[in-house]
Length: 396
View 1 (cartoon, rainbow, N blue to C red):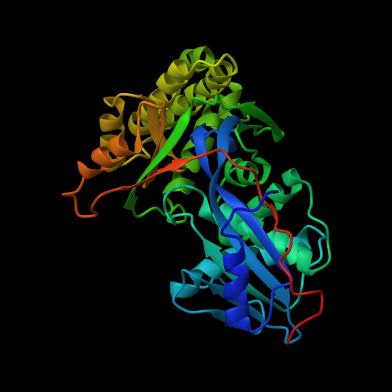
View 2 (cartoon, one colour; view 1 turned 180 degrees about the vertical axis):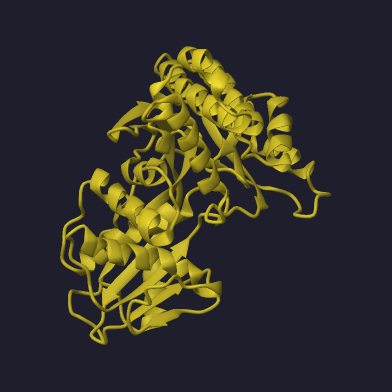
């Protein structure tokens, strides 16, 4: 990969914290869910983009056997004599993700250092639905593998390892969208995932497309039960409909069979079935360069999340409402699991930074203040950064 310009900062911080250069530096991007909201664990298709915001991890082995984890965003480092087993809580909770990866390396038959030092730097806004957790997992896995003397696995296997870490050890029952997109991304392209395989392909994003994120900084946590509740509702609907996965149904087939479903599972299932169909329609529109049709489908996705899946929030809905009326905005939708997070807007060159600033300013009176906004580009996936320095020797 071509490392982003900020990559050296994490090595400098590692040296300052641990007193020596790292043996490995790895980098992984965040992602935007372009379309495919909650379709992944329902056997459907998703479309995402790795983005030009990243998590960097620097690491080195040590001979103490301790796991010393430091994040530029955390109040204090985490220093462990052994695997704690139980999840860490409070200000140390961020370390559950690197520890989950460390456990998963052994479970995948891959080498790992028994004692290590690790530093994390990120320019991904946490809690914005841009998958900072998947980026952290991937970068930690690549850094620890390099420290252990192993070559990086194929992106698909790397994504599977990171998803395993989050499902099994963090307790988040996510699908493959986040880790798959962050691992398999490529500049100027979207990642299409057929989650039944999973199978990964790429779809070119037309050069005239502009991606914007509006992050109102609402609290966004998917490990608090609502994501798992939606998954249970989808599984209930699939059982009642007699299918292995909701994405097995076309919208027409679902309409014929939905009468016997209770109201809530029916709404969840309708969203998933129609969203899976929208993913296919977006891929077709992008392949013919039709950004107007793509934008309409993105907005339809948001309205389905808002009214059927009920994982939006009033603030995200208000942002989509305002974006719909702006010149140059072709479509907008929540991105990620929902229940907070951010809004993705697909635009053309008519929607400028000044227009984005003016729109954000319309929310200045709300308690959280003006939403953060940023233009994004589709970027390369996770990789090891060359030239980290530090040699191969173990460290005290």
